[in-house]
Image 1 (cartoon, rainbow, N blue to C red):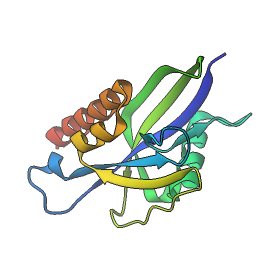
Image 2: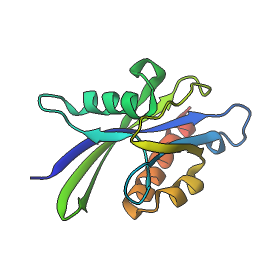
Image 3: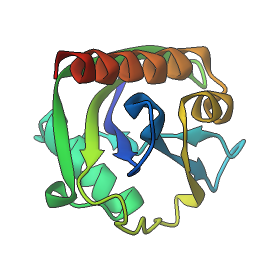
Image 4: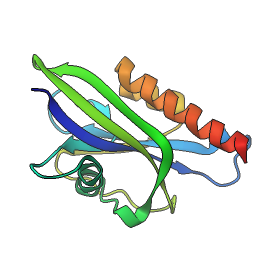
Length: 149
């Protein structure tokens, strides 16, 4: 059976950037274990917990961001599949905007650093193709929404 984890691709919009899609930065956390990879906040589903609740709990635990700090973006849910130490893992990511771009990130002991990064810098940090593709897909989703306004 696959390990299951859930999380958020958290982004913030900076003021006074033109064009508007250039004002988006994504939150990545650097693990304090293993190869110190960079990833959005996520974690394993607890018994009896639904996926969205897991994503909210893990984002609070890992980045100090409460549900009230986030606005979930409609129409985006990405499922990634890969292996970790020979076991299949699936991760669900929702997309969420940080309502107040100045909200402070507070790391858990699972992470040693965080960074807000524009799309290409975030993809460079993320390293893994599946995560890079997911970030780019999220960015396209936000651009499509922007274009509809």
